[in-house]
Length: 168
Length: 320
Image 1 (cartoon, rainbow over the protein chains, first blue to last red):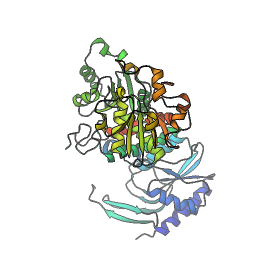
Image 2: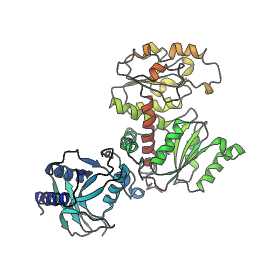
Image 3: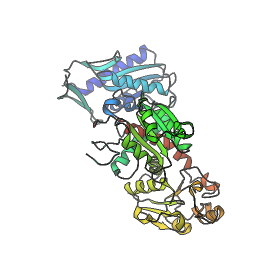
Image 4: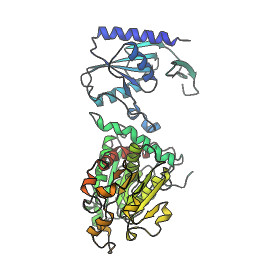
């Protein structure tokens, strides 16, 4: 069983290092609904960022509308009006296929042209389908195709691995 | 299976033709979905890629400014390709039948028709006869229905008043010729407003008006008491074939909304109008442009609400 505090500590340490190494200036942190926002809230507090956390709901940018349609109760994204030239730290809970991040980047770029975007996730699992990789992760895991990581929260943050009946 | 043409086998929206027969949860889902589209207009790039690659044809057999432009903008903000046709420039004026026009457009791989027509039931007729993968949205048919206008009005009311349950809503003016009023009455009753009151001279009310689920008043001063939402309707001069009113100025004297009359309603009442406004006929400029007016907010909300309805109707249809 993985310890959530351990993962958060590791992600925090990696992000601090990236901020220094890449000279991120007043980074804007953005969490992806829903799990990513919980993780981002924790990181936002630990890193002592002043600017409010940005929230992103990528439902309108997903690439599977033709299969699943529009999801009701999409929470409106809350990003600052001008993200032109900003350094952004994008946070999600689990990195899997990479499609969520692609959608998130598309949405962010519709708000403006950031200077750079850094991706941090709590867990990076195998199975990516497009050439996008997180810059840092609390943990990297190899799972079978039927296994899914499920994060619950926000207080306390907890995750477990589910075995689904889905396709391999 | 459902016998409602508007819904697919799973009970999801396929066409949007009238409010009638749609459930409270479905109307609420439309409002909730619209809520999420409001922010799109604030983006630097005012677009989401939801309907990319879809083709929408606006088929306007009747004049319209607001409705056509907001439908067009809504489609464009969903990244769909839009074609707006108006009767004056189409083959219908050369004698082509409605169904032939539809068949020809279908052959161009269209995914949705947005229809405005002077004949009641036109959108319904097209929905019945068009290819199964095509969705039809009613943008106003005769005196029958204008459901997207009603939904954007409901959205605006909810945005300001939050809850429908305690609300007393007055709809004032030419109820007889108004497809907007019919759809508003159905939507308000489905969403559970405490009272829908129509205020109009007898000549501008349909004969069966009480059966629509409304209370009736023939006096503006009496009718405006305890009202939370005042909806003014346009005096539809072009539809008046017989002398239903003595004169416009007489109408304004009795049923025109002035600052003084508005004071009879609750102090926090909002004033709405579907447009276009006849200033000095049904509403005084001071009220139309005043602090209680939400008329321009209605127009902006029209985009988000139409985006919601279009994207919901374009969802993958499991039944086909």
